[in-house]
Image (cartoon, rainbow, N blue to C red; front, side, top):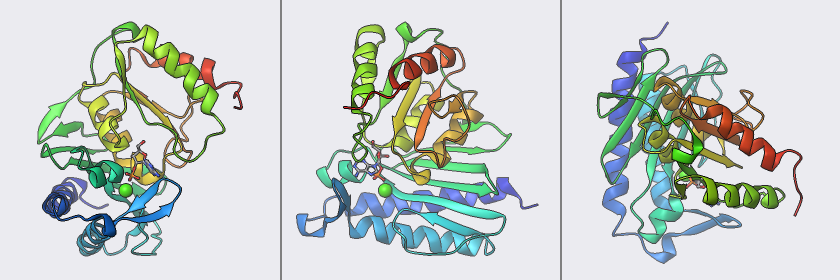
Length: 269
Ligand code: 2AM
Ligand code: CA
């Protein structure tokens, strides 16, 4: 078995190095550097270069591992271990000069996430977790909040940008949250949303349409901070299932209940 604690320190350095590169490019990015991958889907040389740097460093760290990466700079499947990497989570914020974006790196052992690091680049906040060993922010232990009801909760979400078939359900939930919680934030980096649930800034987060690299690291960090993570059915297909709900333990039942009321049955727009 590999030494996850040792690897975790190296992954934290890797994420911070990539973050430093990204931060240094913030003022250099020009509009011609922005490419469109698809509808509302942008990428820059910064995403790609950061990914190349991360991949190179992780390959040296664990040569047998494969990769699931957003920008496809490498194609390699590992037998037991696979890295799941989003070099820049919050690219739209980055392009517009809004300082909320992160580097997200997870390590999966077969189907289980065993290590996660989310580095919030501008605040220099590094969230990390190793399976079974707790969650940390810049080396200090963190825990989810202890708010006990949605009426006392600040929630986060992301707007659908691709799959609009569940728009009416999404808006129904939105209306309910506006009236019945402390409010709803949309900060534009799912990895940061999850990290903020883990350290108790948000009580809960939900979004659909996300990819494994947006959520894998953050989900482990929430769980290791004492929180709950599931898909919209309350099941465990939240890494590859394109549905994620994360919250502190106390509100998880009530939160999932509201999500299911809105999304089940799905209201087509
Ligand atoms: P990204 O910046 O790595 O693309 C915001 O709701 C979340 O959705 C972010 O984690 C963002 O990750 C992800 N996302 C993926 N594709 C997106 C897109 N085309 N537009 C906006 N957010 C996108
Ligand atoms: Ca990205």
